[in-house]
Each structure stands twice: as structure tokens, then as C-alpha cells.
Image (cartoon, one colour):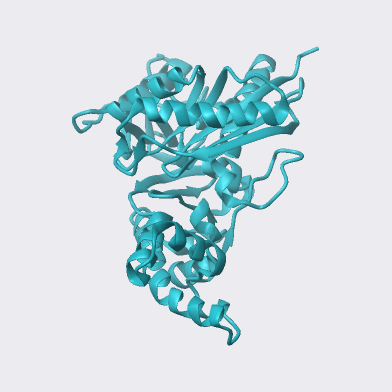
Amino acid sequence: MARSRIITGLDIGVGSIKVLLARQSGQGTDLNFLGFGECPTEGMNKKGIHDVNRLAKSIRVALDQAEKSCSEKIDRAYINIGESRFLNIPSHGLVSVSRADGRISQEDINRVIEAAQSVNLPPNNEFWGVLVKDFIVDGQKGIERPLEMMGTRLEAEALVLSVFSPHLKKLKEAVSQANCQIEDIIITPLACARAALSDQQKERGAILVDIGHSLTKVAVFQEGKPMHLAIFPLGSSHVTDDIAVGAEIEISEAERLKKEIGSCFEKKVTGRTEESRQARKLVKVIKPRMEEILEEAYREVTSVCRRQDLPAGVVLTGGGAKIKGVTDCARKIFKLTAKRGIPQGIHGLEGDDPSWITASGLILSAADEESDMMSSRRGNNWLRRLARHFIP
């Protein structure tokens, strides 16, 4: 009988570091919450990691908190990477089918994926992986599983993923200094989407917008596959800065007001108390910045598809999704349904805080890997493994 295992998700964000632990059953089907830890991030800002030692100490503090919460030792974790120099580049690969009888082999599939990787990257960016969106056999599109099909020409539409090499190197160093081994590194928008979007939403067409401390991540899904990923340097901390400047108050006080009475939609503010009057003033500061963030996300989405092709709508996550009225603001800009995403898929994880989506997604992605390995031993789940195809 297969043994259960403990999975740790380590979300290294600009504003905070979050650690989540769950136990996966021996059958790989159930995940049960064990513990968590969180602390403010030091040594990293929206431009990247500027002090590896300080970041490592922050990671260690969060790991220690998580260990104390469940009396389990953490020596390895799944972590995320997501900074503004992340690139996803549309790519196309084409090869001739190698076998004389025209039957497509696994070697042909590997060759066309390798051909799709042949893109020019900016200096200091390195290849991270490739996500296959679609296969084309002799001009026939929409092929999900070309293996054993007949044809003379095989093509692949793909997304080539690239990360900023110096950031990746410093991230690995910081985790290592915190005495933690990296199990795997997952692109942040993919981790968020794993926890926030259902398979049905991805199939119908959906948008994930994760509004973090200083960065916003966007993922667009159609027919169950990622069509576009993006990260840009705007986040909820910009809202805090606007409040601090506009009201001439300290950052800490501005953050408190944002969390307690802040809103980006006027109809969400009611009453005639002094607090209500203050909240209405805050709307005039918060609303323009949140609209800027969501409009930038909308531009990313419409650069690859029409909003009419995304009937499952928008799911908002991250700390910025906790601002009152954000879903109303998103509906107005995207002209689609919008809702706040909450962590799901882990039994016993209570609460509806959307800022824990990334950590949850890291655990769920890790559980998928284990389930896929078990399925591969049984000869199943070929397509799922292919859709998550990464080449180190």
C-alpha cells in the first residue's frame, strides 16, 4: 500500500511569505490541511530580490511558524516564481512525421515540442518550459492526442515560458539558506489558477486575475488549456501608497484604512457616520488605481482573445481581491461575471482568504504530479501529463 506524504507549499511573495502544509493520502486522492505560517517579506520588492540573506531569514521565520502549528519538520517545499520580467511567448513548431507508414510516434511529438522551443529570448532570460496549446496534423487543427494518428506533417501551437535568470538564482539561494530543499518551482499564475479555477471554468473559458502586493498575475484559459500568462508591476500596495499620499498619513495607517473601510465601488459604502464619510473619500482614491490594475489585466486578456470567448468570467484572487467592491469593478471593466476566488481542494483549510490561493495551488499542483505518476504507472492520464509538459 502506498504511504501518505506531507506536501509544503511555500509562496514567496513581495509583501508576505506564506507556508501551507497538507497531507496527501496514499491513494493520492485526498489532501488534508496540517498547518500554516506567515510573515512579512524582507529583501525583495517589485523589482526583484535585493538582499538574499534577509529574504532567507523571512522564509525561515515563516517555515518555523508552520512547523510549530502542526509539529511537523519542513525540509523541502514546492515554491513559486513570478516577477515582472516573466515572459510567455507564443510559438509554433513543425516537423515531418518520421515513420515511413505515416504513423505519428512519441518521438515525433517530442521533436515538434522541441521545435516550438526555438525562440529568441532577451538577455538574462532563460527558458523555463513549454505549454502545448494545440497539435495540428496535416493542417487539421484541434488535435489533443496525435500519438498513433496518420499524417505527414505535425505542428504544435505552444507557449514558451521564460524567467529572469538573476531572480531565479537568488530565489534558489534564499530557499537554500533557509535550510529548505526545493521540490519544484511553479510559475505563480499557473499555481493560482490551479487552486482558483475549476476544470469546467477552464474548459468554458475563464480569466484569473491575482492582485498581489506589488504584482498582478493574469492567466487566460480556453478549452482547458492556458492561452496566455502575464505578470505586471501593479498591485494592492499601490493603493496603500495612494491613500497615504492623498490623506497625508503613515503607510501603516493607510494600510489599516484600506483593509477596514476601503472600497473601490461607491454603492458599497452606506450610512452617514464619520466612518462612512471617510470611506466615501477613500473610494475616490482607491477606485482609479483599482481600475488601472483591472484595465491593464483586461488589455492582457484582449491581446489574445475576445471577452465573448470567456463565458466563465473573471476570478479575482490575492490580497487585492479583499478590497470591497473589486468584483463590481471587474464586472464593469470586463463586462463579464466576476467573483472572488477562495482556496479549495484541501480538506480542513477553513476561511475564504483569497491571498492563500498561491500556496494552495502549489500544494494542489504537487498532488497532481504524484497522481500523474501513479496514473502513468497504470498507463492512464496521458493527455493530462502532456498538457502540463515542462522541459527543464
